[in-house]
Length: 630
Image (tube, rainbow, N blue to C red; front, side, top):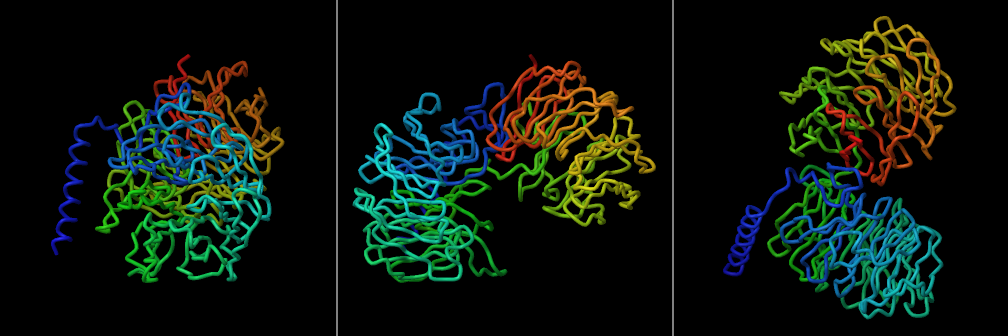
């Protein structure tokens, strides 16, 4: 009883200290907003990118989170941002501290491994050297002298941690290597792969010692073995793929199967516990969370519920806490009392959609599985959260009172009252995924496009269908009204752009110059021209009345998925799969500026009402606010 009370007292003391420290600090406008390590030209960031991996520093004081946009460094006690190490040009897959805590190694799909000096908080000061390999993960040897990286080329590479020299290449896996770990004595390395096996190697010679093969129809799950770890005494290895399994490190024998598991697994520092992300039978059926296995008793403990799969787990080296990271943030539990003590928020998965509020002064952003949030792009303040709007596509009515929301990968549109956060209508009719929605300028009708090759018009007040436009022969990706509401322009996978009478649904013109799928079409503010963007890597400007092609803007190096006019119509912003945003003179077609900073597809751009600010949304989970005044 006294021991329990002491732990409860300690817990409340920690909470009080944390609250006092938080009150004394200068909080950001929102936990979802960050100005750390911004790209050149950017003023603000909404969102911090999905968490792909987490690691504690050896002293348990910091957490490194590999995210879609860089390596975030947090104070592990208070959750406060310390640094964002940017430099990778694609998502960061993993991050790990050296045994002395002085360095951090990170891996990425950009084809590089980067080694950072952990003493510096600015990326330009912290970067020590760069290694060339597209890797899923990397680990330091116990003495800190070597780094083992897990490559997408099916190989494990050993590097000199001091100068980055390549020491050895371990080959044998027939699938991408997902993870590596050194034994506590540093003599062996275990690797987990998409081929469904874990392999044990001699760390000095690189010889393959034994293969741990999955013995179920799962074969390590759809993605093979995602994570491997040695026990602190080096006698066993735990792996996770389709299931979490414990192996004898000496013989390679399978000792225990713990249950269905996601890619991450970890031993506690004393070896008593194993934590892994997985599924379990809860009160209301199958739940997702962090499962805890008592090694000594061979039995599960009460899981930590997260209601989400694909979590990365890490025990603090001091043995007090357990952390898990996913697309919703980083969660920290105190192991002794079994309670969650902190959440680091602001992280998120892909931006499902983003748009300007009708007056152009705010930005509405929806992340996967999260509600629509409306932000003030000047202050970073959260203006409104619409819980009912949590789909993959949406639009806001001109008066700002209604939202059209499309359920994830769905065929149904819901009309939602933003003020009351209540559903008004459900619009059914499309037979495949809806790709875009837009309100008419008077707010009386809604247009929607779909992969079912149709465009549909709806009465917003009653929810009744008005017209179905069927001339496209491919998936329709975009639909937009003209400023006067008299016409609608659509863009599709049949390589055409079509202009329709918004009242009757009559097809007026078909524009055919694109040589690939057309993803985006939008009118200029005066309605005289149309800008389109497509898979042929071009942006094209058309006469809206005659359909004549006026200009072709070339410069993007991959699919262009979105384009938008400035409010005065003098410039056009375009973006897409080459990760850049390009600003063009709409009259001459001259490229004025190129903005770089996103690490995944840029799926939306829009000019704010001041005409000097541009916003961009990306599949890296962030929205960036740019100064384009010059």
